[in-house]
Image 1 (tube, rainbow, N blue to C red):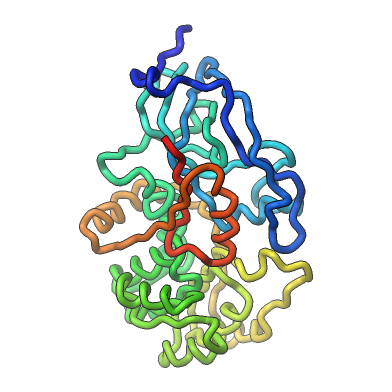
Image 2: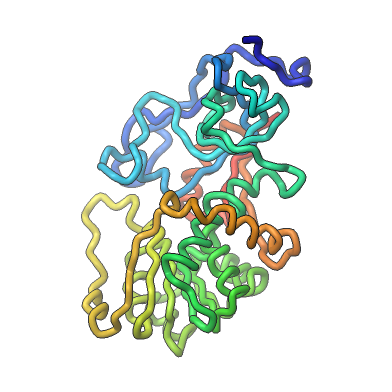
Amino acid sequence: MTSSVSPDSAAHQIPATGRAWHLTERPQGWPTPDGFALREEPVRAPAEGQILVRNIHLSVDPYMRGRMSAAKSYVEPFKLNEPMTGGAIGVVLASEDPGFAPGDHVLHDLGWREYATLRAKYATKVDGEAAPLSTYLGVLGMPGLTAYAGLLRVADFKPGDAVFVSGAAGAVGSEVGQIARLKGASRVIGSAGSDEKVKVLTDEYGFDAAFNYKNGPVAEQLKEAAPGGIDVYFDNVGGDHLEAAIAAMNVHGRIAVCGMISQYNATEPTPAPRNLAQIIAKRFRMEGLLVMDHYDLQPKFVEEVAPWVRSGELKYRETVAEGIDNALDAFLGLLRGENVGKMIVTLDA
C-alpha cells in the first residue's frame, strides 16, 4: 500500500526524529524536573491502519500526577523511560487508513511529544472551523465532558440547587459552575487560590459568590457564601474543602468527587473528613467520578454545550505554554495552581 502524504509536506518534511518527554523516576511528594527528560525519538512512518500526526496542542491535566506513581489505580501508570501520554490535537501528515487524509485534524492520546504514529481507530477527527482546535482539549473536550457528566448525572443536579465547586477556576470547575448557572441553579459558589481567580469567577463566569481559600478557613468562608447551605458539591480538591462542604450540605445533597488535588503530592496518608458521620443524618450521597464511564453522553454534551460556547453564554479561558520544551513547566505550574482555565501546551509549527 502506498502512503498518502500531506500536500504541504514540502513545507513540513517528515523528520527522522522528534522530541518526547519521558518519566525517568517516580516522584515522592511534589514532582521535580530531575525526574523527567526530553529525548529524541525516531519518527515512524505509518503502517497499514495507522496515521502519522504532527502535534499542535498538548494537554496537561491533574490526573497525570497519579499516573506517575506505581500505585494501582483506574489507569495504568506511566512507564519509566518511555514517552508519557495525554490528550493532544494534531494534523495528519501521512495516512495508511482510508478514514483519514493528510491535513485532517485529529484528537488522540499520544501527547507529551512532537510527532505520534498511532492506530487510526484511536484518533477522532475534529473540526477547526466549528471551534478553535484547542477547545477540543478543554471546554469541548475531556474536561468539559467531565464537568457535564459530573454535575448532571453523578450529582443529579436539579434546577434550584445551590452548587459549590472547588478548584472553580480550572478547566473542569469553571465549566461546572457555568452549566449549573445556565441550568437554573439558585446559587453557584466557587473557591479558588487567588484573588484574581475569584474575580474571574464572579465577574466573568457569573458565579454568585466566590472566595480565596488561602484567605481563611474554608468552612467559615463557605458558610458566609452559602448561608442557606448547599445541595451539590463538585469536589476537585478534597481535604478541608470536602470537610467544609459536608458541614454546609443540606439534607439529601449530592457530592461528585472528581479530584483531590490537595492530596496528590502527600507523602503520608491523609485523614478522612472528620465530619463524615454527618452522611447519616443528612442522608447525602457521595460518588466518585471518572469521565471514562460517561462517554455515552459525549454527543449530547457537544450538542448542548457547543452552542453556549459559540454564543458566549459559556465562557472559557486557556493558559498557554509555548513549545515542547515548556511542557513540563506547564504541568508543574498546573499542580501549583498557576493556570486559569485549561492549561494548554502549543507546539511551534
